[in-house]
Image (cartoon, rainbow over all chains, first blue to last red; front, side, top):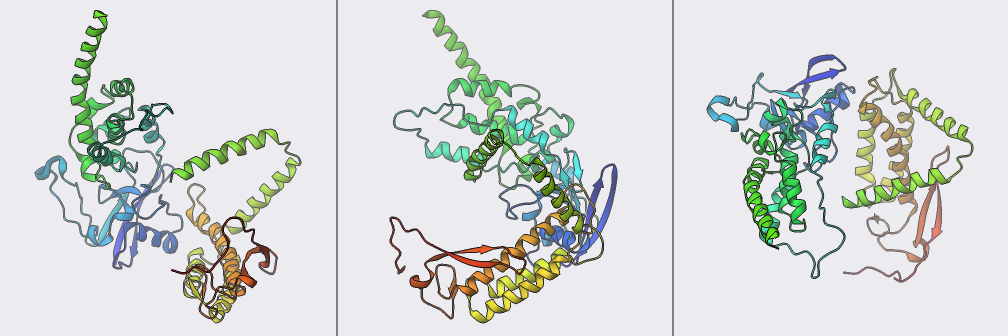
Length: 264
Length: 181
């Protein structure tokens, strides 16, 4: 038996409710929530879709760690060890153990709650739109096609694995402080498009300039929490740091270009 | 995945265009269907009744047991009868949660109605089709029978349950033949 302690919310009313669920082998936290929703309280609501860590809909705070309910096994979290956050620093999973055989389930932090475990994702998607997350090149394809080396493809793939589940956003201290901070998912996406050889130089620079500010690359605390919680092993912090390094390089390039132009 | 985006965009654009070009006659008729939908939903709400989960699990189990890839007359007949009973039971499904936002219990109850209809169509269609074809594998009719069954099954909703009709298949470039590997 496992006890789910769920943070409920309906309008301004917030309360915690516990549900006992039979713990069977292979039971995920999402399965346990289905059991509650189907047998104990039809009113409980949470988002889900694919049930297999593809869609990213079921991100929530499980024992104080943002994770996907579908890929979190009840057996692995019901007696999670308390990790000392001081000892492990930023990489610690700040697990607060409630009781034996109990799992604490709350909505994803840094988002407004619509009801129970369902949060409003609109702001997260708006942030993503800020960087124009698409290839700006037109329909014309260069002769011989757009070639991409396997090395670049591998570099990009790390970032294309993102499923926009927003666990990173829920774990991010900068996003918690500053609503305008673009956040790990968006900044990682910006790097993914920077790396893309189909993207024109001027568009690359424009996108980089757009995130060269406090709401963008410089808002990051570099504490790697996003990297620690990502269910798809995306590395937003590394992407943010790579873009920070790219900025002076691009400025130098720009200066040389200007010099050339004046010679003409 | 990309298909959903491409075709979603096309479908949305066409639907918007259609609405603009079409003279929506009898707008009252639409209001009537809206009212009847609202009635259907409010009929589901509140009171004591069956839980959607109980009926759905029973349907799931009969579909798994007797209407899977391998099927036969005895199993399918049993399934058609069971699903007919479940449809009756389904009429008494009631939604306990009165939530007006993200009421998944209501969503599940509505979906269950569709599953019961469709389950019956699948079982009845499979019972009638006395041959094996593709993923429809009748253990009591092992061979494919183009002479009688190279036909589409069409199911029509009637108060007594689905009525089956058949339509000839239009064959163009690829002639039907037995698949052998």
